[in-house]
Amino acid sequence: LLHTRVFSIENGLNNAMKIRLVVLALFVSTLLCAQKSTYKDKFIEGNYLLLEENYNKALESFLQAYRMDSSSANISYIIGVCYLKSVSEKDKAISYLKRATASVSEKYKAFDPKEKNAPVSSYYYLGIAYHLNYKFDDAITNYEKYRSFLNLKQTELIKDINRQIEMSKNA
Image (cartoon, rainbow, N blue to C red; front, side):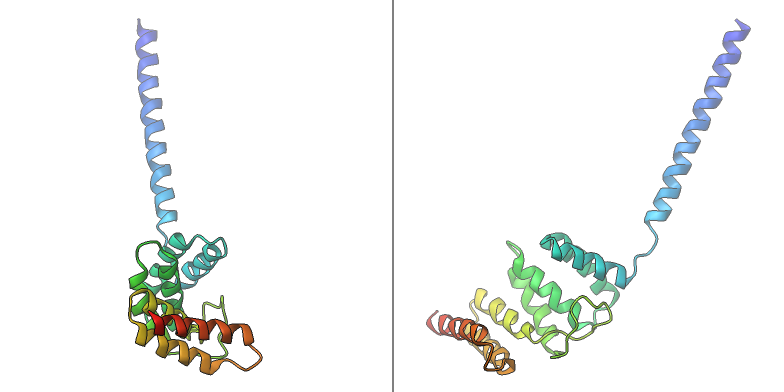
């Protein structure tokens, strides 16, 4: 009987000890996971998700980066494009792409977390966003702005822009 009681007490201590270790392990893992992600981390994560064409998850990462630095036209551009790829939130693309077009660079460096400017294609995507939201005059204005950056050798892009403009005029 005494042996049974000692065994029960030891078992109780072992179980209590196991519970404490599990709680401690959960606490430590939570602390490790809760370490603050940086803008660069979220930017890189978002780009990997874009390469996988996982636009919804990429959008989450880029929105977190945007909360850390809302002054980046680059992040605004990427968020706008992600919203255009969404099923039901295409209208949200306009505000981000408008911010992006405020700081456009022809020397844009894609995938660089230090890049603060947006590419000239921001005008193209803003045109699409306006078109999808029935703002055809604004769409044409942005398509024409994008076309002004193209050189004559970019015939396929020019044809596409001209087609987009024509569709907006006929809408």
